[in-house]
Length: 243
Image 1 (cartoon, rainbow, N blue to C red):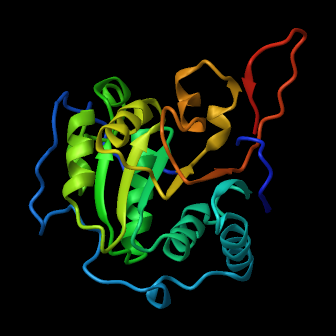
Image 2: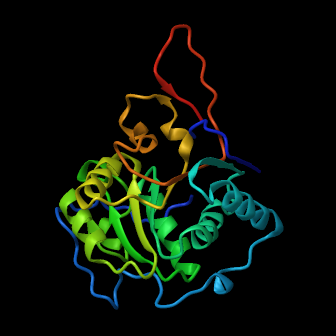
């Protein structure tokens, strides 16, 4: 396990084998059916961490208390998502947190981790039609509101109370929707967590690399999480984003 604060950028499925429906706009979920992953919470009530997870949380909090970028590298199955929950609770308990996942199944899995942790966050999922057309988990299975539109992201962050945490879960390929929504609402994420961050390394012009730049997705803090950091080499100069 490694927690790094340098400036290098850095599951199993809960699915059923059916194609996701193509939809537009927010799926209005009743409060009792979703939209909040818990009604009350505190740092003390979060699941107990193992010693190595506790060390990681402390290192992340120290390294990102004032903002910036950091990496959290740990093996698969070591509980990186739970570490992110604890770090978010410490860094911005009433802030706006964005978690970017490479796929809809991993987004659903991440939502389950946050829900099981008892976080009292209001939740919105953002995934464009192109990212969910051929996966084995349905948008309808997500127990929170879902949108594909930047204007509804903007409206959601404006109207949700700022007295407790707001959580946006987004697939890597839909980060532009969230970024445009935040710009429209004149909002900045307090914490952006990039899960499986090695997918975003490489050529800086590719779409998933948008998570690295504030002009595309404004954030005070970026936490890159991966089990397999990528080290790139090239025979000719290229604009690359490293992890």
